[in-house]
Amino acid sequence: MDHLYIVSYDVGNPRRWRRLFKTMHGYGEWLQLSVFQCRLGKMRMLQLEAAISEIVNHREDHVLILDLGPAENVIPHVRSIGKSFEPIQRDPVIV
Image (cartoon, rainbow, N blue to C red; front, side, top):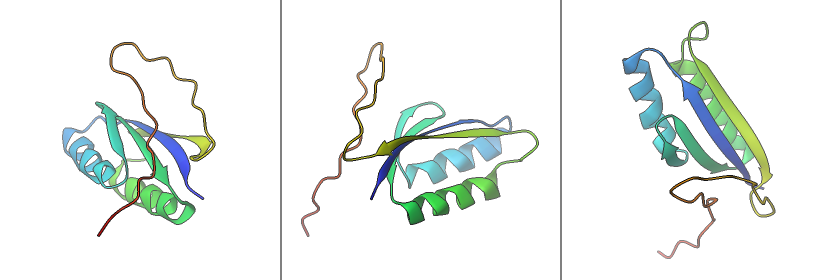
């Protein structure tokens, strides 16, 4: 079962920030400068945590991962000023 996550990070070093930004694109949708929305299963979330852990400096950087709950049933209470917030939906893939 997928969960909906918000990942936010504060990375002081520009090189580490860019590396984390590129890594996050493989896991979720970019919302703002250092904020991503991810819809992930348990194994994929563990992979993301491992990838983040390899990039960040554990003494200088900070990453927050907010678990909003099961993606199918979550109704996030988000206040958005400007562009609206839309939770990631699982769409069918036609090959």
